[in-house]
Image 1 (cartoon, rainbow, N blue to C red):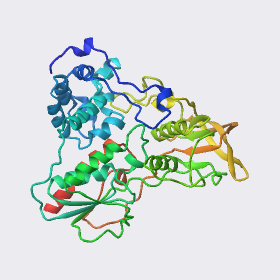
Image 2 (cartoon, rainbow, N blue to C red):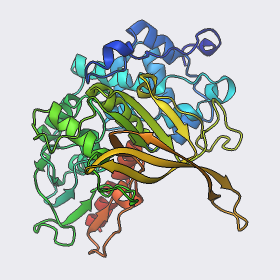
Image 3 (tube, helix red, strand yellow):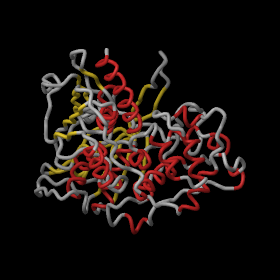
Image 4 (cartoon, rainbow, N blue to C red):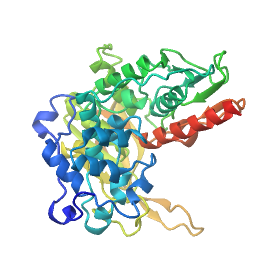
Length: 447
């Protein structure tokens, strides 16, 4: 720990975002970067706490205090080595992780200015790529056993990476035309440029992992010839809203828009009837989470006239919530870069029906609700108030999360990891799950 008092004299400094009028004109990454001097100063704020809550809170068990200290001292390669011990893909988490470590940082709990761990993380990995610290690590020998991973999303890539380094011959199957899962087909380019995934794929292939794409695999009929299997197919079924008018043209699941837009940016084309585009439309986003936020940002870039986001739950407190003290995840109002680009945000609204004309969406009837205590305890009960209104719109995007998949009964050499095992969660948790299950598969095959 080079400067034990830096947190007293150096305030938290975030890199911030590109100007709104600039960023909404393209799909380039919105987040900016600090220069190396300022980044090292930010790393100096880490206090190397005796009990490191950041390390405890991170699903991967990242040792933030170690690589922050190395970064502060200008030892970039050492910081990279320390980061790589626990995280195989810092270029992903450094861009899109909600930073559970920062929520648990002592500086956050004491003064609301945590160490910029997430930004420091991505700075370290990008420096590593730029300086050539990262080279394919090809296993010196194989153990003669083969593993098939079904799904090339975060969990699948994590499992494959770990098993490959253990000496297994690994093949990764995926139904899509490119790897990444929701990293590629769910998260917009303005948060994660897909060249970042391609760069990592080249390394994984050089290390010996084989990717078999455009392969729709029935997990009850897995491909033959493997000693073990790991199912990492995520949560493919989005939560729908089956109310009157759902069949109208203009009502879409969020991923219908997000995945198509990413494919368009990758060079694919779609017919006019297939295109899910917000240009010239009033857009209503139903759902207040990150996926809804991604829909807002994408709608702006496609040329929406206006964007409204509604949420059935109450508006969270700003800054601090006594109902969710640490170590709980703080349920507070989150305002993303997409929200700042322009959005009417409303809470405590339930959608009763969609309204249309000649088969096309023209609006949605919503109703105010209130949440009453449950006399039996548990989740509060939603109570409609009778206060209804029509929100005029030509496009609705349903961003209400995903259903947890059911796991069929499989042979003992079939394992599940990531969202396929736990239900929808964070990318960082999927990566952690992949590392954990890779160890379980290794133990099983050595048994």
